[in-house]
Length: 180
Ligand code: IMP
Ligand code: MG
Image 1 (tube, rainbow, N blue to C red):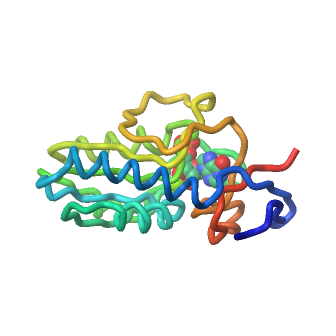
Image 2 (cartoon, helix red, strand yellow):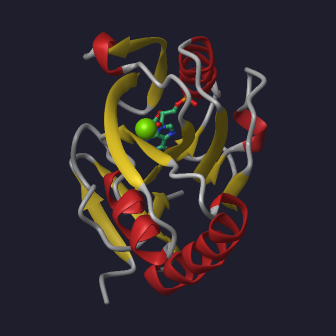
Image 3 (cartoon, rainbow, N blue to C red):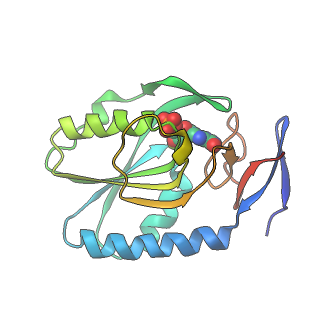
């Protein structure tokens, strides 16, 4: 168990989604993925850094044969989206004939996902599925494909379970929301 209230840098956060709830939801998503992707040799593609914890739990909850890799994208500075996407490794975007499962920690404006979907689609992927642990529906500005969503949350900044505030808080086991 971890505390109800945490301090991350200059901000206070309160507990919002407990680790047991997260794990329970991941089990359900894995069951659905196993049903729909069996025998497709899917490539799970995690968006770094935020998705590393979710990816680790999700792939271990899945029974199918799968491969995985990570890509590093960035659109956030502090607690707001910077509006541009930076990919640190353009050469890792070749998905010809692959069944790709994009694994994201959170979809906020949808900018990152719409950018990534376009790149993967135009690189010749056979199919694409999108899994995001969190979604902020009120914040969506770009049209994105969403196949599996863990939790829909209000438009508040969250940390923990891979998500950071200025690089900190990723190792918290629960998800916390900005206090007040
Ligand atoms: P989008 O491009 O606006 O959808 O932003 C998506 C990315 O911004 C996510 O992959 C996260 O890395 C980051 N992000 C969005 N909302 C939050 C939040 O509440 N906490 C931490 N990171 C966030
Ligand atoms: Mg992310």
